[in-house]
Image (tube, rainbow, N blue to C red; front, side, top):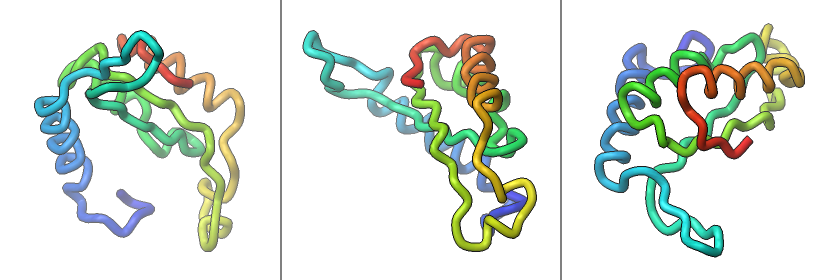
Amino acid sequence: ARLADVPSDYPEIAKKAVVEMHRQVGDLVVDGSGLARKGLVVRHLVLPEDLAGTKDIMRFLSNEVSRNTYVNIMSQYRPCTIAWQIEPLSRRISAQEYNDAVLIALEEGITRLDS
């Protein structure tokens, strides 16, 4: 929250929202043809220098939502507008940072990954 203009309690509000979404729809259900029919999909954008807090997020998902949470780990971050002027947001993530995020998810028990 230090680099974004959001309230200090944003992480807790977001966590409550994810828990409620999972309560309403459960884990992702995919039919025989590979189409998602219902359920929660979490998209996690990896940021430079772990600014997205991957370990904390994956631990939260595993322990407080479901180990079967389907997570899309995204590497698409690119600095736009004023982000070019803000360290460490001024660069794209490295392949190593992305791979580390995937390994962290697996270590925390999240195995349903679209990465």
